[in-house]
Image 1 (cartoon, rainbow, N blue to C red):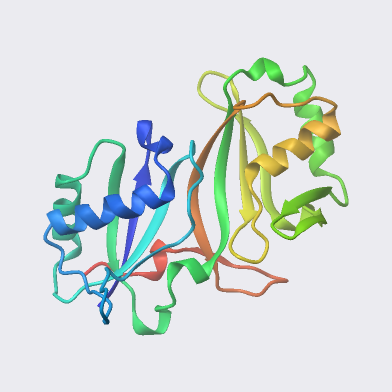
Image 2 (cartoon, rainbow, N blue to C red; image 1 turned 90 degrees about the horizontal axis):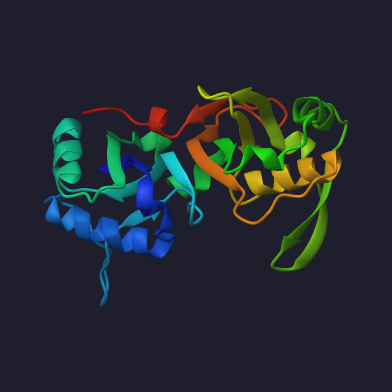
Length: 239
């Protein structure tokens, strides 16, 4: 049975890298007594796949891990067992069965991601940052130079920013919400958007100025021209 686990990552665990998170879940699954399936061959390993590696220093409410299990353990029981062996900083939110018709692994499905961006020191923003943000978002094109493994290429961020809004938290500090293209094709990080905003508004962000929180990951059940985003969690079902 194919299973999709949703979990959140917070606190000091944001400094733990992706490979260590993989090893962490392997141990947690064994300790929780989850009957996970293993690959065949001379060196069997747990069958698991993460949707989209989270950068070091980022927190998240929407991380996903796909596994296969051999028994009919209920969703509620699995969540309870896993959270009972979790360290502070990781919490399992759901444990859902993936129907055969929706059984593509999470990594191949990711098309978009939601982020909340805050600033360690809001004073890094210019006084007229709200007006500058409106001007930035209203451009017909937002051209940047993106560095890749093969070199550099010019990229227009505008069609890859599905949503972009500026608000405030309870203390009146600025918060930027972004829904960005994600996945293997056009993966846009919030840092790229904020760097482009700074260039447009005439200021630069110091290192470690941003506090980035990923809210959710989505699959696209529509088309490239008319996307319809569905959370990876919604593709599964409780059992």
